[in-house]
Length: 117
Length: 110
Image (tube, rainbow over the protein chains, first blue to last red):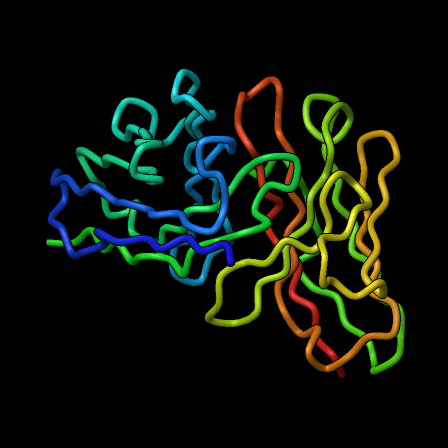
């Protein structure tokens, strides 16, 4: 069974940092693009970043470029999102999802991030 | 603000057919496959349609997708109460180098 489990969400002050993790299981992790998507309270889905199979390609939404970094460790079947200089408008539930030809066929349960003083 | 546009809401009675449109441009829908997601309240999104018209295993065949030029549509045939959810279209945008979602359409079963 394919599973994605996020962790690391928390309450953080503006300007602070957080590192989100997503552990995959039940599939060959190293063969898939991985994606982070977020959803602010009461809002729609927003793609944040993705990373290719060996970590050599990364893409970011403009609003996080330069502040967030996506990375992966295929030996640990995990993808990460390092979030720096956090702003209140980064407050959201952050989901990781499996990419590929059927992007988002599998999602984690989400981890909440709140940026507030 | 949104690269892809969708109607904010749609509704129908049980058994009716409901169609949701998604309009974009040549940099996204016009040159890349469209995917559709369903999100029930309080849950993670679920992939409903990928590659314009393909259903993942387990998705009922009353859900169907289509694409023409720079627009796409999701049709729900035989609407059921459990179809009450938010529906999002999405596609890769080659100009933005980003995966873009539409604003979502809330479907209500009357």
